[in-house]
Image (cartoon, rainbow, N blue to C red; front, side, top):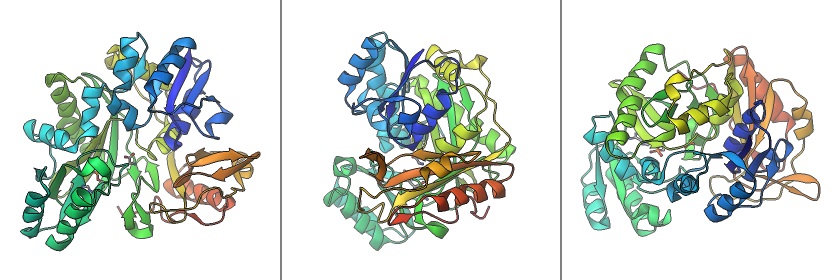
Length: 421
Ligand code: AMP
Ligand code: GLY
């Protein structure tokens, strides 16, 4: 079957890499893809949000399955549009993607269906939000309601910084319209873990656990990014906790979306805080995590394509999912300055040497080809991912590869996978 992957980051490279190993895959196309996907698929110069152009391509090229990576096209309704034209696309409908597209919708759903999450208030009016923030006596997270590339959450230890956060989001509009409505919620203490699950509207099939490292510097210091590295499995998510997450968060969320008339088919990503009172939901995303997908795909034993099809067909109850016992660690190499401003166009060396290493894949994200060379073109540039018999060996292999790759001003965390449990 011909496959179209929408997106061009590390997540999409990892999905393409995994699907390219399937006997079911014939031609794989990525829109727009990157120099990494170009090695295993055909890249298309189509923007992920240009749904008309994607539809046209899919119809003309006998695409049997479209897999949507990023949230924006999902929130724009790409899956509805494809289905209306009789095409098979993996991902939630526009109505179901609101679980990620609006934090207020997601929080209200959790409240109504008793899914554990932080206590919160929602504000549309900057003055009311500011007055509320001034009276706070406990630390809070101030969040833009809409999509902000994982950066629209400001953690505030006191009332003063909460007031500043309200101004940043609602008045200075640091994330544009996404901050017209905000959530102010109680700050939760604990370890963070991501649990992703396939869903077909009713059945939930969890993937193995993964842990992201959101802050830009070692020791979880500095501003949050889209993610600076990840590993899988996350030993912190014990079997007992996993079952608790399935029963109290994932299954109730899928059941809630069905009873709201918005059946969720696709990947439900639960960002969780493991608190002293049990797992609490920080957020739901409606897609694969980036960079969590990179280590997850390296560990996935099962063919991914039949699982995508089962989600579309509502037959997920007949699927199983097998994992390699090894640990996978992904270290993100970023442009110096990210998540703030950074320079682009730096020549990257060492990729061929890393390509020859066993059990390592350098997934591309912000790269592009220029005059026959690979240069940087984004904040997160590469996700260097290694598989190892133990966490320690996966970490060592990943960092050995990272040190082989160089460009002027590269930045990466040196403690991925070493978080205290
Ligand atoms: P979100 O996009 O809502 O997942 O938030 C991004 C990041 O902010 C999370 O991964 C956490 O690190 C942090 N965060 C969000 N909400 C909270 C909260 N209520 N308590 C503590 N940390 C939070
Ligand atoms: N790694 C965080 C995310 O994909 O949202």
